[in-house]
Structure formats: structure tokens, C-alpha cells
Image (cartoon, rainbow, N blue to C red; front, side, top):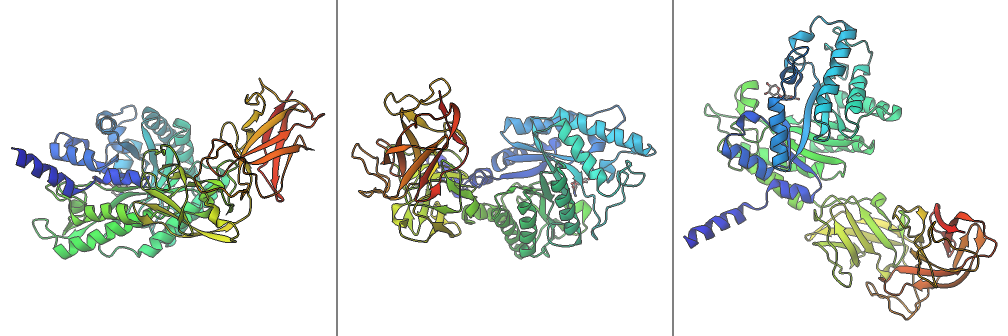
Length: 576
Ligand code: XIL
């Protein structure tokens, strides 16, 4: 009995982590299209709940399924998907509100005037999106509205008879109706054969640019990815993802499957399964290069239930699990990409923790690195002295590990090592579980002052105490002329005596080497002290000043200048 249990345990360990846990470390959803009619089949429900963190109804939310008659809504199947997702802590994508295929445009719409058609779609969107507001986090609002040559597809919604709009006006209208029905939901345009750079994706890109410029509510692009072994070049897919995410849009992979030639029993060759796995892995790795690629979803998950065999003769075996729910090489390639694709960091993500100013670092500056695409899902805090490794995360500056203040997925707080002093540039690299990110060259300055603010927004009331009473200066406790204040900041640069990385400052004062001046209300202050902040980590600075007599009352700007470099604008101190 004991041995059997041990074997079971080993079996689980060998199987490794579930896709959904790996995806959580990458800050993405891993989803599957589902049919609620299978939820009663235990291995279907178990595999889905164990491996995936997102579901999307394959058909249950399509127009004809959910709104079969002018005044008839059929919610049961869609509700079942929502209930399953909620019971298993999964995100829900909605699919799809405006589509041309039969299931996207039921017969009762045929013959309506343009005005009535527009009214029908608006009602449909507000009813369906409204019902699932707060539950469905993202909608494929519009599906497949372009032809492969980049022209607008002729559909009931566009021009046959159309809803009375021209160009992409019907798409814009659907997005606006969806935004009105649920202002929180992310709104996607979803299509196929537009995953790489071609006429169709060019046209969608042009539309997206126009929508962004005019404030039309578009949040993301869904890339379906119904592929064969002859799938498009990954470099072209990557370039396409780059241009859309550079526009500020999210990208989600919404319907991934890679269909294979199969024999009469639906079986593919081992070679084909291996080639399929490579494509699955490459797609996941490509998504992980972009912080704004936020989901990888497959169209179904088991070969037992897939649209492929009935849609493409002689093809099948397109999904990551086989018909018996056993993981295929494709599933393991997805897992391995999630575990090994390096984190990607960018210069824009590395900023001063007080001011959020970026572009350079200074020795001892407290910084935040945002948007690394790999990391521990939960917040980690050091106990005692800051560690240089936290939750398997390190942040290296020319190979020197920085003291870490906290770490969670997509956000790590750190202190730039003092050893960057005297350099003009440093190579920054983030590391999670021993896997290093790209190496980022960042300019080094002797100082880069930022003043901490009470709400940590980088603006508004500064983190400033009355140096005699230690009371926080606020509207209720304003400062006045001749008061001594302690301003908390970072980025003052080196101290003398020198600060050691990660040391907690004691009562021995270690003044900043640089020249520090302070203005309050545009008046110069007498600076009594600038340097180490007793009790805080090396790099945190305290600046004691005397409030100028005669300073104006109200919220007055506070600016710290260190060797000619000013702290961020917008920080104030309340004067009586
Ligand atoms: C397909 C479903 O998988 C089938 O069950 C249904 O009969 C037709 O629709 N692109 C899409 C999906 O956006 O909605 C389609 O789903 C597959 C192609």
C-alpha cells in the first residue's frame, strides 16, 4: 500500500508542473476552447481544470447559440462555461459578438433593414456583454471581418445589407457598443491568416492605428493560429506581434491548433507529432517575448473533441492532449517553453522607485524593474537584511547581484550596487530560476534623485517628516518657516564613508559625496544634512532642511538637486 502511494506520488512528480502553474510564472493565461456538454466527462473536466487557467466557449456564446430568436436568449450552455471557470479559478474569454458565419448570424437577422440590423446587434451586445460583465474579462468583439487580400469582407454586418456604416465603421460600432456594455472588459479583434505580416495583417494594423489615434475602444488583437506543419515563419509572426504590441495593444493567441495528416483511425506519425510540438513550443516562446502577449489558448485541448477532423478531410491530432487525455509532445513543448524561454526586460521598465524616472541608474539608487516576462507569481519579501536572491529572482548589474527589496511576477524592487560608481554604463540582467534575461545596457549617472511620495505615485505629498517631532507633514500637520524637515529620497549616489550594498544604516551618518541643494516653494533651503537614512537600507537617503522663512502657504513644490540633476516635478510639502 505504501509503495503504491509512493509510485503514484512519483508519477505526479515526473509529470511536472501543470501548464497553468507554469503560465502563472510568465504572467500569461493558458486557455482552451471548451464545450460544456463534455463537463460531465471526468477526464475532460479534470484535465481542463488541472492544466488550463482560462476557458472560452467554442460555440456557446456565438450569436445563433445564445440569441436564437429576436427576443429569445439561451443562456444555459454559456452559463455552464462561466460556472465551470469560476469553480476552478479560471479566466473567461467571450467569443464572439459579430461574425459572418451561420452561427454568428442566425436566420432571423436575414431581411432586416440596416437600421434594424444595427439595433439588433447593439441590443445583442449590450445584453450578452452586460450579463457577463465582471465575469468575462475579454471579448472577441469582432471575428474575421477582413478578406485575405486586406479588403473588408462582405457580410450581413458590413454591406449585405450592412448596418449603415462604411469602411471599418461596423467594427468600430461593435467595439463602442461593447465598451458601453462593460467598460472593464478587454475588447479584441480576432482573425486567422493574419498572424504573420501579409496583406490581411497590414489592413488590420492600419485599422488598429486609426482606432488608437481616434480613441476607438480596441484593447487587443486575437491571433487564431489554426496551423498545419507548414506554418508561417516564426520570425514573421514575431514581427507582427511586435508591431501590434508597440501600438500599445495586447496580443492573445486565441485558437491555436496544428493539424496533422492522420490515418483512418485518427493517428499521426511520431515524426509529425514531434514537428507539431516544435511549432507549439515556438509559438509559446514567441508570445513570451512580449509583455503584452497575455494569453496562449488552444482550440479545444483533447484530440477527442476537435473541429479539425470534420472541417479538414484526412487531418486530425491537432491538439496538445490525445484522445485519451494523455499529454502529447505538443503539451510538453508548451510547458518547456514556459520554463526555459528567457525573461525579456526592457529599458522602459527600469525606473527610480521614488520618481519613476528611467533612462539611467545611479549607484545606490532604489529602482523598480517592471514587466519582466518571467518570475514568481506571488509577492516575496526578504526577512531581515535584503537578500540578493528572492523567490529565485536575481537582478544583476555587470554580474553583481543587487539587494532585493521585494519580488513578484513583473515587478522587482532593488538597490543598484554601489560598484557601478565611476562607470558610464552597466549591463543589467534579470534572472529567474537560473535562467537569465536579455542583457540591457543602461547609462550610469553619479546621481539621479527621486523624492519618495506618501502614496508611492511619484507625485503629490512627499515622504517628509518634521525632524523634531517625527510627525509626517500633511494637510493636518503642515510645516512652517524655520521648521526642520527630513525629506526621504534615493539616487543621491555615493556616500563617504562608502555605503556597502544591502547594509542597514546605523546611527553613524554617511553623507552624500555629491552636492545637494533643496528648494521649497521655489526658495532655497538651508541643507543641514544629506546622506544615509538611519534604519533604512543603503541607498535610501534622508535630507534634513530648514524651511525658508517667508515661504508661501499651501502645497509648495519640493525639488532636490544633486550635482545639477533635479528630482521629479510634482512633489509638494504642505506649508501652514
Ligand atoms: C468553429 C467551431 O470549432 C466549430 O465547432 C463550429 O462548428 C464552427 O466554428 N474560427 C473561429 C471559431 O473564430 O469560432 C471557429 O470555431 C473556428 C474558426
